Amino acid sequence: MGSVGNIKQLVVESLLLEEDFILIVVDPQHPQVALPDSLKKKAEPVGLHIGMRLAKPIPDLQIDAEGISATLSFDGAPFYCFLPWTSIMQLSNGEEHLIWICPPSETKNETKGLRGLDSHTANAADEGADGDDGSPDPNDKDKRKDKPKLRLV
Image (tube, rainbow, N blue to C red; front, side, top):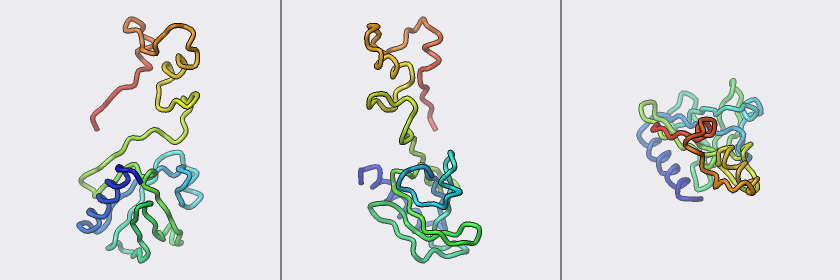
């Protein structure tokens, strides 16, 4: 597990000592996530409540170096879930939120092993013969639109 996974584990353990429950938002399409099929098919993140003091107890809740595992209830039916640290996108105690913004596991812009590049840069890397260094021309409005924006969350 990497350092981000260690941080996530420490945060989850600390929050569960203080809170009745926490909200965990996961990428249901992560290859190692174990969730009911109805949730695995969703293209958007899924929020799950876990805690030691929920109305419906989770006696097998386990938090370790690999991730979080527990038998959760979905429409009244129990289902064993596994959430690896790399699938967890957000942790929340209701008032405070920790959000990790990560590229999806597979992007349509993935080109020859390049990941997380905008489409202009990825296409320029593919073409390579036009002499463009991949940076957008400040005078070209079309190329500036493709440039990713940074936002404080």
